[in-house]
Amino acid sequence: MDRRRIVMGNWKMNKTPGEAVELVSQLKDGINTDKLDVVVCVPFVSLADVGRLIKDTNIKLGAQNMHFETSGAYTGEISGLMLKELGVEYVIIGHSERRQYFNETDQTVNKKIHKALEYGINPIMCCGETLVQREAGVTMEKIRMQVKRGLQGLTPRQATKIVVAYEPIWAIGTGRHATANQAERVCAGIRCVLSEIFDEPTAAKMRIVYGGSVTGNSAKTLFDMDNIDGGLVGGASLKADFENIVNC
Ligand code: PGA
Image (cartoon, rainbow, N blue to C red; front, top):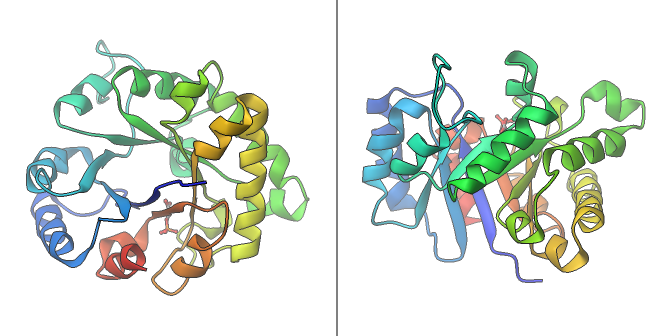
């Protein structure tokens, strides 16, 4: 199956707008985007500047969150409509840090995904188990629940716009990535769940990526696996190493 590979940088709460422009300017010259999609998910305040900078390139603009309503009395929130106007093409939904610190649930994730699709923005839906869950042998149970609830009510056609990011919580920001075999096993499991929810051809079209301490050293073995179509990269996306990850 010919799935176009995708590598996404998740900057989290890092870089001021000035620093963001500097980093993306360097990145623009260093990477080759002919064979894959490259997305930079920058903080809200840098979206406009970075968007202008990458306008004539193949690098795509991503946000790290959005609200599930279009507008209204939600102090401090940002809507999909606002993101759309800035040229945002991808949005991370349900990152484990948002689930942990900002009370995101599978229900809000599901609402946000529906809303993003309404605006033609591709959702990057995150899922992943804790170390305790992995050690208890319930990794796939956890993932299955997150994926099924998160993607509830979507048509197969809508589903093909989604990128599912498998990010084991124990691997995020720890310097300890999952082995290629561990990651492949779960990503293959996710594809089975997707074919149960939708159908096999749809599942075969959907992109599933791995995230959690990906670096230039580990990227190639991970991305070479059959069911891993790229990566969601945190820490290493803030450094020149991101170029190695993309170019590998
Ligand atoms: P990390 O973060 O690459 O720094 O582990 C990945 C993520 O949280 O998306």
